[in-house]
Length: 391
Image 1 (tube, helix red, strand yellow):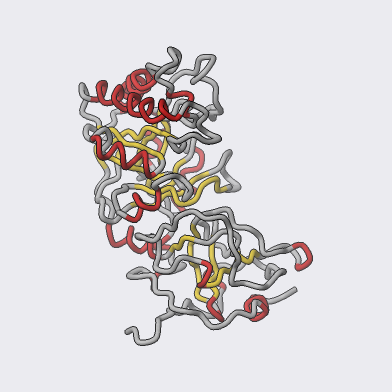
Image 2: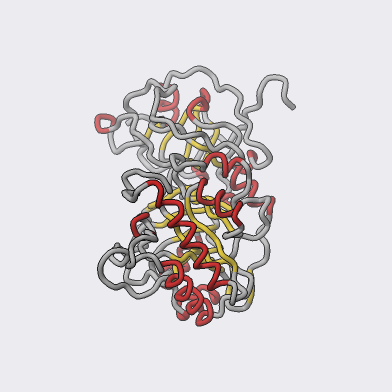
């Protein structure tokens, strides 16, 4: 069984180049930079202690309406998908906050089709249901309800509708939502691709923007790097032993002081921009397939493709390698070379999507240490890589 030092030495790469994530670099691996915002589609009540102990402060939960049959009505949904008053009360008693997204089969553009009588009135139906839930739960005025558009508004595998009808259908959906919301004091938000966020921002049909995780969605790098978003869903489908389904994590934009968290007692305080900055700075966008994963034994391990788009940097290692978490926990999942991440933290650094290319690493097999590596167990504290000539 190889030791951590042997793993890193055997990678055989040259010394690290310049990597200077900005202000929060000294906090890598720190509990202060743990994920504070999560979202998922099941009742949080039984898991609040575990979530709070993990550093979570705000939970994204769902609004929805009853399901019918036929187009626009048939899709997977967890049995406890919709936020209830009892769950909200439990979250509040735990000292945590919520923000909400409305989703009712919003994963397919066919369900928005304005030319189909079954879906042409979707925006009005969804908005009415969202408003009723907001009233029942005591959602404070001027807080947002994000509405999901979970696909690229262009022809493709998730969008079989004729091209000329796709965006007009999405736009009509939000026009209907705004007609309903004009009679209320809540705000309209959008969860989706960069191009969707951009167009709805320009038309004034949404005021809060939650960018979905895919770097391949049209316009997402430009919208993210322009700093116009409120939330970015940085890691999805995380498995936790205590949870009945997967969890996603999100990061907040330090330049947008409020992303929509609340309790029935009022809006949450504005998030701390310094903490939000440190969280962004201690993470990096990662090139696909370039993480050397720790594995149960040397024979079973290959340089495995990493399907996540970001990693949390836990330690600065030897020869330009970093110990990283791919699942937003406190364990090191593997090692990535400085050349295989986008240096400088997340802020303004989302790359345009490209197919996986060659990695800097040449190591083909690695072994997991006999015990999982935690930050506290590391013999060498994190080091800071500084380019030549820098202070």
